[in-house]
Image 1 (cartoon, rainbow, N blue to C red):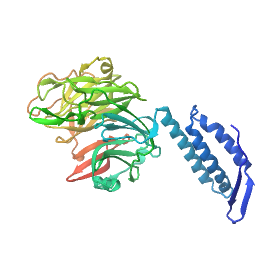
Image 2 (spheres, rainbow, N blue to C red; image 1 turned 120 degrees about the vertical axis):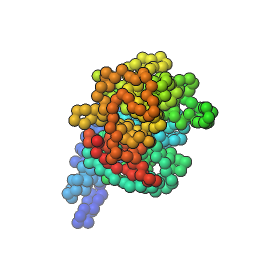
Image 3 (spheres, rainbow, N blue to C red; image 1 turned 45 degrees about the vertical axis):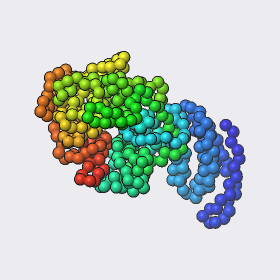
Image 4 (cartoon, helix red, strand yellow; image 1 turned 30 degrees about the vertical axis):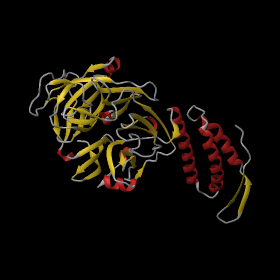
Length: 430
């Protein structure tokens, strides 16, 4: 690409006017024009915007360089290259600029290139939003924010509720979803503890609406009325290039898991999940998994999902993909009745795998994953709040944890409910 001669008028430190053709800058810009659009092996029109901005900034920077500020030159060039890479990443994943029409902000997960997946149960839609969060190191994050919900309410200028928490595994930045008043809200917290509300105006995003979901209305079920749309998306994960969603589908056997590709294409109508609920002593297929993790077991990908009251089940992904409508999961543990799982992560300590499961009534459980390969599943009732299957220990130091995500090999980020307050903290993995 041809470059043009550039003339600059500026003032140096001696306040004398400096006017000269910047041949060196011209050569720099020639290289900049030639190389930048091909930096990732692609040519996209959004690069032209950044190259145009770059030509103006680099012209000014060249004069500044003459007076010793090399550091500014490096910072500006890094900024421009980051902007170009950000635009190319968004384009390659099928994202387009606009304002996501979120009706609710629930389950969160991170995908490639710092893209945040947001589950919107109200509209039964999954959004992919480019966050632009590219700076940070998870090993440097140490957070301790008391009364976090109050702080988040101040940032959002409205009373807030919190639905989910996720960590960008590349940067250590924390994202929290919820609502500010009646409006969906997402806040991000960097490694220093600085909190801002994620802007959703004119950002690269894509969305896909789930088919075959429960209607958004109250339905009489036994002695209670419930809106089953609220459980259309209970948890979400990005695994091996695909999105996994637990929740409810419409019709009979509503408990389901969906799997589909990203960039968004054909959307799964949901595969029914049947489980043996040992605390109830029967087969069930109507309740949604509350939380799940992906886990390799004997070289095969699986979901480990926790249900209310509290069966832990294993769902082989290869069987899920082959099933036409419904599969039978394996109940690998009964963790106690009258309890609702809240969040779960998987991690390793000294080469041994564990699950960390938070609950509303039974605290935080550290569950061993040893023996999952040979666990044939429970098939007999477990009564009176008993436990069976995979063993666990209760972690008293994590009492009150309602949401969590792994930060690095040694630490997790947790939201802890203490009386009427919610605190955000970095804690060591037990």
